[in-house]
Image (cartoon, rainbow over all chains, first blue to last red; front, top):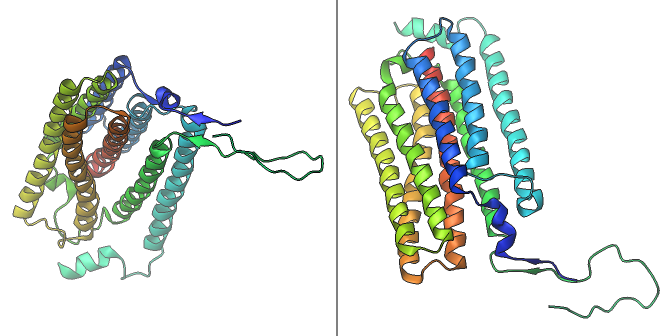
Amino acid sequence: MSTIHTAAAHDGAHGTLRDYLIGFGLSVILTAIPFWLVMGDVLESKAVTGFVIMGFAAVQIVVHMIYFLHMNAESDEGWTLTALIFTIIVVAITLAGSLWVMHHLNVNMMPGMGPEAHAHAST
Amino acid sequence: MDRAVTLPEFDTTVFYDPDEHEHAPGSSTLLGFWIYLMSDCLIFTVLFATYGVLGTSYAGGPTPSELFDLPLVALNTAMLLFSSITYGFAMLEARRRRVATTQLWLAVTGLFGAAFVGIELYEFAHLFHEGATPQTSAFLSAFYTLVATHGLHVTVGLIWLGVLMVQVGQRGIMPANQRRLACLSLFWHFLDVIWIGVFTFVYLLSTLR
């Protein structure tokens, strides 16, 4: 018994014209709105604007994954998706860990050693 | 190839596959290339984390809202997005084995990609002219490292694109070339995904501060 992998096995990983057009249309909208929000100062709160544009980025990344990179659970018997999920976990740990640790280092720095102190000393 | 396997004489259940699997040439190339891209993703993760930590250390130098020209960044984003869909059109033509139109769409993709790199170089030259060099502050060091690493990837993608246009022209769209086009497709769209992170976290969020 032998399993033969042929080019046909990868057919699931190809997009159609419809896929590309949907992906492009969604990307244009999901890019234009964040630029508009920041350049036009639409929302009063900067924190809210920040969270909203991060949300748009997350959605657009998923759109690209589905419509341009043709991610699905079937291609290469699920190994592409497995590799992606593993990477997302490592990325999340690296980003969250780095920012968390370095933020606390800054906060707990001895008085007079922080970057602000240097800024004052130089002026 | 069916290979005769000599198993021990006694009756026992075999819990492994004694036959060697047959793989068509290049059948695992796309998965391997995807795993490379995931490792590339980790490079960008570290650069994003560095920018996240150092992005507010201006050292008395210029701040993002003074430096960044958002309409230019929006134009650059549009260039990359256009190049993504034109590469998609090239892939669709390649699947129909039409050499000329595949090359045409690859050329259009290359022009958009070159425009992206050109605009980015113009932006860097402008920033340098204003005195915002990598040596100015930790924020600018992290900014140039992250954005230039992405730009370098796009440049390598452009060279690869040119090589593939020649290969498609010489040998037509045979399975090996289709595989190569599919790998560059993953690379190209992956760079667009990284750019979403760059324009959101580096340009837009930093300008808000």
